[in-house]
Each structure stands twice: as structure tokens, then as C-alpha cells.
Length: 113
Length: 110
Image 1 (tube, helix red, strand yellow):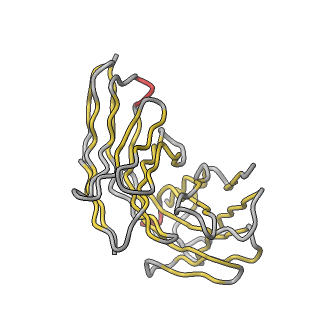
Image 2 (image 1 turned 180 degrees about the vertical axis):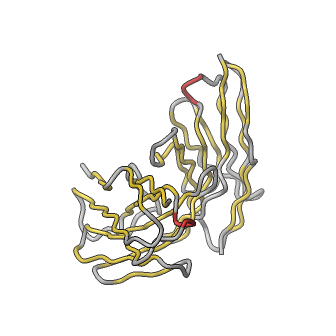
Image 3 (image 1 turned 90 degrees about the vertical axis):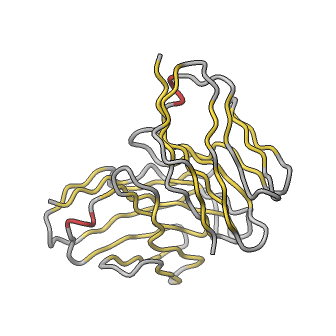
């Protein structure tokens, strides 16, 4: 069966510090991968998605970046965090040729102080 | 592109009440339709889905029917429980992309 992991589960970082959030998927190959952000009490905002190694599409211009160094690894980064980067970050995967269903990880709660 | 409109909430119900959460969408092509549920502090879980017109998705007592003519996918449950308290997201998809509504918070009181 397939599983998706995210770490860390929670993170408190000062403004201006770097960020690295990691997402890994097990039990499937060539998944599509997604990063979403959810601000408190709000809906989901798609940040990045990837259909293959090294292929990243950005949905919203901001100070975040994403990388996919391996088939089942997706990393969200920032060089300098802003207060507005606080939120709940969710990673998801889907089959490359599926019905569109996405499978979500447990999320990372990021607080920027 | 796709868009979703769902009632904002919060929706507050007593246990065993009937639930309806409305969802309408606009989409290019022929989307699959999903309802996801998010319990406090957790990621999203698929609740149910429908991939073609008139399909009914169902799970855990929840149901939703794909209505192409009205571009709707309303979520219903005949008798809610306290454990159903969560945020519910409607999402059509075309290709690999999901478009999420803003979510509807459901609070069920004993």
C-alpha cells in the first residue's frame, strides 16, 4: 500500500530564517506531487506541483521554492521566511494517469515569529 | 479554469440532524468530483467521489450525486454524529489538478 510522510510535524522559525520541509511517498512510482498551504481557517492554496524529477510548476509567485531530487521526494524551501509564511503545509500525491484523486500527508504546522 | 462555491459555514447541528452542504462548480471539460474531510490538526482524507454524471458517491453514511445539468455535488447525511465535526471541502478535478472550495466547517453538538 501507498503511504505519504511529511516532516517535521510542527516547526517554529524566526522571521528571516531558512526553511526546508520534506515529503516522501512510498509504495508507488512516478507519482504527481503537490504542495499546498492552508492559512488558519482558510481553504487550500496550491503552491507547487511536479509531474516528474526536476519538473516543478509554480502556481503562486512568492518567496518559496520546491524541488524534486528523487522520484518520490518533494521538498519545499525558503531562503528567508516571512511572517505571512505561517500556516499548515500539506503535501499530496496522485497517480500520473488516475481520476484526479489526491492523497494527502499529515501536514506540517509552521509558525513564523 | 475551475472554480467551486460552497457554503461558508460554520454549520452547527444537533446530533442525529440531517446535513446538507451545497457545492456548485464551474469547470472546463468533464471533471471528476470529490469531497474531502479534514479533522482538526490533520491532513485531508477522501470522503467520497464521483467520476461521471449521475454517479452517487457514498461513504460513512455521506452521499453526493454528480449533477451535470446543475453543476452541483451536494453532500448529505441523514443523521450526523459528534464525530462528524470537521471541515468539508468540495473539489472538482480535471486532469491532475484539484480545485478546492473554501471549506465548510461542521459542528455537531450532543
